Length: 137
Image (cartoon, rainbow, N blue to C red):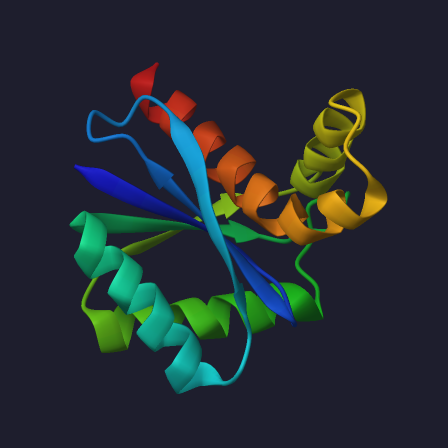
């Protein structure tokens, strides 16, 4: 079963995919946000290409665990994805995933320009890998 991971932002959506056995997550792409229909169409195309059965979306929580305005925006988007794509969407705490992604890229000595291009895809990979690790235990 393939699982799709999403890191949903205001301008971009980072996308990651599990391997067929659900052990590892790999970054796939970064979607530039253009509008609800266009964004969901791009996600749908990826899901159809890979035979995705579940979507895991990062849920941006405040450091104290509360939900802020960005959390509501992400949850609203995910409700639309579930409704229009007929696929289940699970929410996953994404605190510090972007920080971890940036740290890994800094350690890999990537330039600022390269980091900016792939940080959302990397964050989606961290979100999905966290979920995969939780279900394998």
